[in-house]
Amino acid sequence: MLTERGKEILNLLTEAARQGMGLSVRDLCEALRLRSPATVYAHLTALAREGYVSQVGRSRRYRVLRPPGIPIAGRIQAGAPIESPEETPLGELLLEPSAFAARGEIVALKVAGDSMRRAGILDGDYVIVRRQQRVENGEIAAVLVDGAGTLKRVHAGGNRVVLKPENARFAPLVLDDRSDVRIYGKFVAVLRGDLRVR
Image 1 (cartoon, helix red, strand yellow):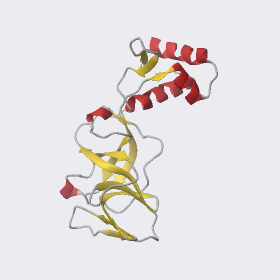
Image 2 (spheres, helix red, strand yellow; image 1 turned 180 degrees about the vertical axis):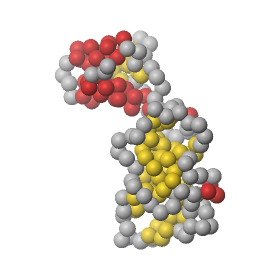
Image 3 (cartoon, rainbow, N blue to C red; image 1 turned 60 degrees about the horizontal axis):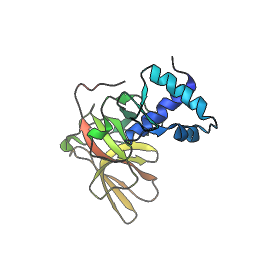
Image 4 (cartoon, rainbow, N blue to C red; image 1 turned 60 degrees about the vertical axis):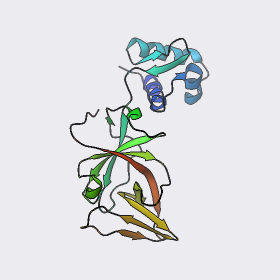
């Protein structure tokens, strides 16, 4: 059974692993605002004994032993906007983030609806999204419209944003500066089939 502090340390190491890094005792002390390296070291020793972490070679850095997954940030509507993605992940897809040629933070969103069918994105699929606030015109992105999320091709010009579906049954969503439109992230990949989730 992990202690609360042990869970915090494991979470920090998992986040670092998603960016391809390990963390030192000093890094962990700073992140947790602790003065005593001995406290952090004691927790790392316990985590290592349980098989959660190990020291990286002769360096003073630690890493998680199991590969980190991709956090599932909720559902995204391929249709009219629905709830915004979650701050707290709803689980993880058991895939290596490095499997996707996307630097930075990536998350998974479960697709609801079929407005992006011609782009090969179907109801029930997972899309991998790189968190960023801007995309090029014509790129597919997860977009927040007045706080609700949707997956569309983004076309911006002047004070207007047009969110275009990839299904003739759906009309484009034309928004002006009265709407709060924010890019949540850029579409990277689509996954379907029997995916392992934890």
